[in-house]
Image 1 (cartoon, helix red, strand yellow):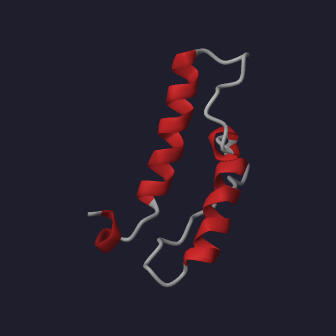
Image 2 (image 1 turned 45 degrees about the horizontal axis):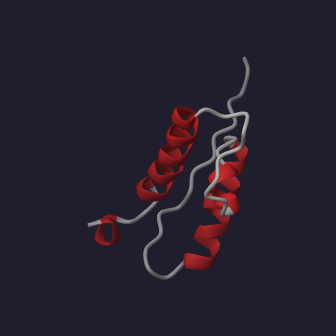
Image 3 (image 1 turned 45 degrees about the vertical axis):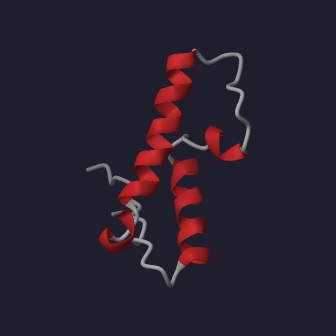
Length: 73
């Protein structure tokens, strides 16, 4: 049986920002979602506009889903 590599990011709860930030970055790199993290607003030339929008939106989803409810509202 193949073992899946599951990584969970502990939710950010106002006290663990530095560690949470590292975990989120690592998760995004692991899932090949890291390009928007590089701080470049221009998409790579090999990507379509739609691919870039989806990648950016996936990053946003990971970040939002890793916030504690008290911070997400």
